[in-house]
Length: 133
Image (cartoon, rainbow, N blue to C red):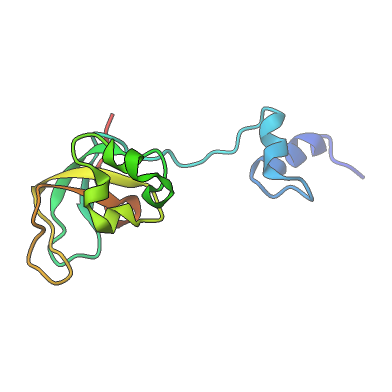
């Protein structure tokens, strides 16, 4: 015997992402949106460095569109404010990077603090303190 609201309960089950043999995109095409987290590491967000003795405090000024190791040297030189090509650590990163202006400089692995007020940092290294607009 099938309950009266069987179709609705099946719909609820599918929208939670536990559909039988269906791909996630199928649900989105049918207008049933699966909720996801909104990216908080945007320009204007206040951030700190995770896993550091001195985490620092800064603001994201700019983000790259793609990973720097996929960019040509000319694209790396054309990044605004500070060319990413001049920062070896960021230029060889395999993920999207952000240019951060530090109000309180974080510590480096071997030094007490970074040398520059503005550095390119991979997004996975940053923790959001206050999200931007």
